[in-house]
Amino acid sequence: MDTTAWPVENWATLGEQIAKARRGKGWDQAELARRSGNSPNTISNYERGRPTQSRRIPTGLLRVAQALGWPPDAVQEILSGTDPAWVVGQPDLFSLAGEHAKAVPAAVSSVEPKAPGFMNAELLESGALAHDAFVRQMKRYRKLQGVSPEELAERIAEIGGELSVNDLKRLENGTRIVRPDEGELIAQALGSTVDWIVGSGFAYEAPDAMKVPPTADELQTEAKAMEQRMTQAGMRVNGARMQLEQARQAEAAARRQAQVAMAVLTQAEAVQRDIERSYQYLLGRIDSIRAANGDDLIIQSYPVYEESDRQSGQ
Image 1: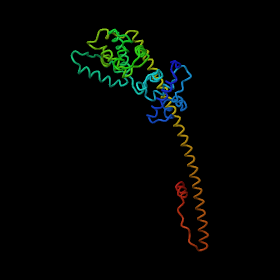
Image 2: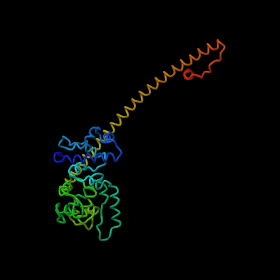
Image 3: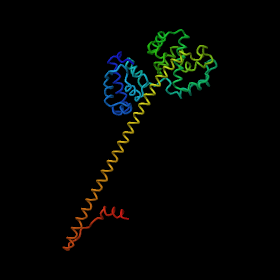
C-alpha cells in the first residue's frame, strides 16, 4: 500500500483515533504495545500521527488496529479520508456467521409462498463464504438491473449513504471487505435485502443468472478476498506468538525474581537467628551476674532458634 498519497492530516486523524480507542479500553500505551507486539515508543509515534517513512502501511500499525478490534481495512479507510465514525468499531458484514446462519433457516420456515425460498443454507455457515456470496450475487444483481457502479453509488447517495465508485469497485474485485452498514445500503439501493442477495444463488424464484455456479473470474475475485484474510490471519498469529513469547519472558523473569527473593529471605532468616542467639547469650550472661549477686533473674523467652535446632536434631 503506497502511503505517499495520504495527507498528513489523515495520519493525525488516525493517531487520534488510536489514542481514543486505547483510552476507551482503559489501556495505557504500554498495554497496547504488549497486545499488538509493538514497543511503547512505536505506539507513541502512531498516536502522534507521524507518517511512516515506508511506502507501505507497517504491519505494526495493522496489528494495533487488530488489537483495538477494528475492521481489517480500517487503517486504510481512515488514511483515505473516510469518516472514522463509519469505520472504527464496525465488524465485518458476516463476522457473526453463526447468528447469520441461524437466521437463514428461520427465514425459510416463515417465508411467504411468493417470496424467494432458500436451499442449502448450510453452505453459508462460514462467515467468509457468506461475505463472498453477498459480493458475488450483489455484482450479478447489479448487472442484471443494468446498473453501473456509478449509478449504484448515486442510488446509495440518494438514500443517505456514502459509498464511492472506487469503493464499490474494490468491493467487487475482492480488495476490500464489506461492512454491515455498506451491505444494507447496497442491498437497499438494489431494491433488495442482504439476506435475499446472499441466498439468491439458491432461491427458487431468483433469476436464473443468479443461480449459475461461480465463474473463474468470480472465483478469482473471491481468492483475492481470501488472500487478504490469510494475510490478516497471519498477522494475528504473529501477534499472538509475540504475546506468548512476551508472557513466557515475563514468567521466566518472575521465576528469577522469586529465586532472588527466596535467597534474600533465607539470608535474612539466618541473620535473624544469629541475632536471636546473641541476644539470648547476653541475657544468660546478665542472669549469671545477677544470680551471683542474689538479684532477681531476667525472665527469658524460649529462643526461636533453639526450637528450630531441636526439631532439626530429632
